Image 1 (cartoon, rainbow, N blue to C red):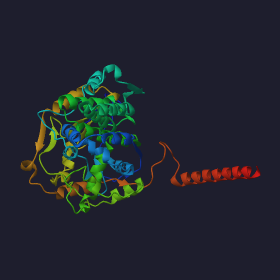
Image 2 (cartoon, rainbow, N blue to C red):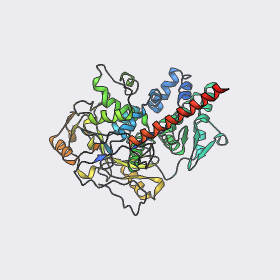
Image 3 (cartoon, helix red, strand yellow):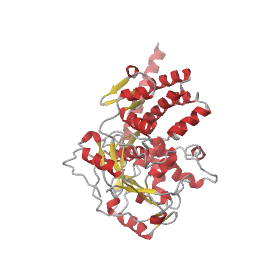
Image 4 (cartoon, rainbow, N blue to C red):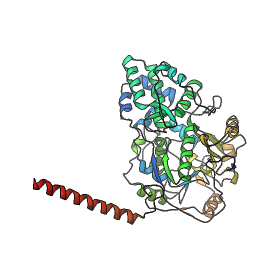
Length: 446
């Protein structure tokens, strides 16, 4: 397993030692999401003709369809409770799940081409003058905003530009600007209602070099899950739209009696109930391995990216950090027989760029993606959704943590119990009622 020297890389998120088989109780943590208001953007896209939209989909994949997905954040908050820092997957009581490159490329409609490559962080982000040129603006017209250490473009600025482009019929730059906006608000969100420099960097590399952003989307997702788990709560800063479609499809697609060929456009066929995070946590905790759609109905088996370079697993590079993920723990999701992963494949690197000097590791990760190892029928056998006895015994023996199904505290470090919180709320309500009664008596006296 890849390990980092905590003295050398102070502040990095690092894997815990996975040596104990004793079950642990996982306490609830408070999770929020980075959400932007997309209503105006959705309204602007209605000005696109079918031909313009077809051109957009051909160039950028199915990212425009993500705007039609209404994410129920309690689902995401509940799912995040089950993240395992040891395994880099969601460790539910009865099964393991993790989003895979293959599933995400199918959702996005953008297969990885080894001859082109994937997004690579190069130590600094794209020059904003290049972004201005890509979306049809003079550099002086690009109005960057700073929020602390974050720099980016306001959502309203990009929406104004989109409306102006649509009004002029400048659809070439309209599509580029729309893609940039979706990259920043949906695929790589970091600050609400802002497209930050990191998202611009991923967009620019795809726009100018065709470098696939899917591993970066997955890296952002797994990295923010890890950070929130280590900090006992926080804000998920990743593409929750794709994560939501992924987990809901696995949970409920087996109940559908109709064809489900399109991951996003057919997603509306799944009826998602309204529940609080606590109820979703219980549902996730109760899922049995024979009551889940192990393979999404729109996924067709093909070769799996199994490892890269000298890494035993797959090092994902995002615009803000790197994290390893282990395809060998998700073989049933890819219509393969689940076998016991070897120890070296579990966990792995996990670090953010802004907390330490990671230049040497970045060189190694970039080199690894020039040597991608795939496995197919020859190595994994014919497609079959099953699990080996060895895997089942390993999972049973390792001691899966029990999920504590209570609400997370409303503030980090809060020590009040739920009963004390309810009593405090009741007391505040009584005081409010008393104040209202006094005001009413004053009014009557007048």
